[in-house]
Length: 208
Image (cartoon, rainbow, N blue to C red; front, top):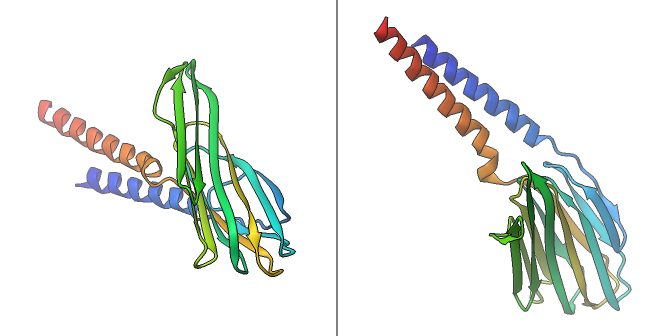
């Protein structure tokens, strides 16, 4: 019983440590129509504000996304969206244990055009990044998201081009979060290790 209790406490403590790290939120804001966010971090949030003179607006956001994380951008156009397109894209290229992983994904709204590819050592594979884009002229809002399921850094871009009535600024909020399934794997592995250790102790006790 004591061994089981110790294992449970270890699992819960590890979970709290991991969650505490994920919960740390750095607020970083940006201003302008072209923004290089560099490498973002899990828990990071903020806004991006760009001036709109009532004519053609081009807003370009780029950066890099850590392994097993996702960034989401929510667009508030601040006025009537007369026409426009929203593009979300990502790509990766890295070496891991002697293997070269390469791939990318692109989604364009409102046409909902989607393209993705992935390779391992030049051989076709499933893309390890996912990109999505949505734009709604009836609510004058939009959203893009990029998910990096790879073991390396992935570059990302979220680009809006269009016409907005009036001179209200375009405001974009964003957040970076851990991809749910991979983030739970360390706890799962720790749980399996604790169960295995308990079984080994019981087997040893019976043998004695």
